[in-house]
Image (cartoon, rainbow, N blue to C red; front, top):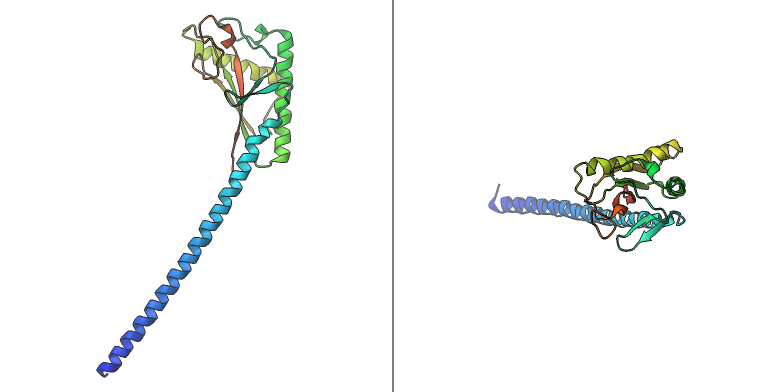
Length: 206
């Protein structure tokens, strides 16, 4: 083969190789752009769903709950939860408040049912957090947990359950360490011998 033919063959092969590489890079570039675009669309859609989910909590019955702007959460309205010192007996509370606590539980149950119909992907955390006064009693953590558990048991006795609803129930006791406490946060303030209810939207499988 002559020198000219060898050079011609080399440059033809080189040209074909560069064309193939260019085509591969072009395909990869287009694929990357498409994937990034789809990912962006999915992220925007997820954000919209999360926004809807966060706002959904505003639909809870305002007869029993009011929005606390300081802590950005809903709290019980017109229900005084104050256990006797060292006690987790829910019957420490006045009968009228016990009745309203039952109705508040039903309001949460109804809200969860409505959310399940309106937002199929909706999921919530329902946290019952027991508390104690800041008296440095060594059993405050256990005592506060028992106070929260007392509410859940009472709800169950009244037929208020969340098994088939988009809701995970967590019973906890924070003792004297929670952020959400009545002021002044001192030993003599028995208003912290209570439980608080948190309803927290969570994104779920969006």
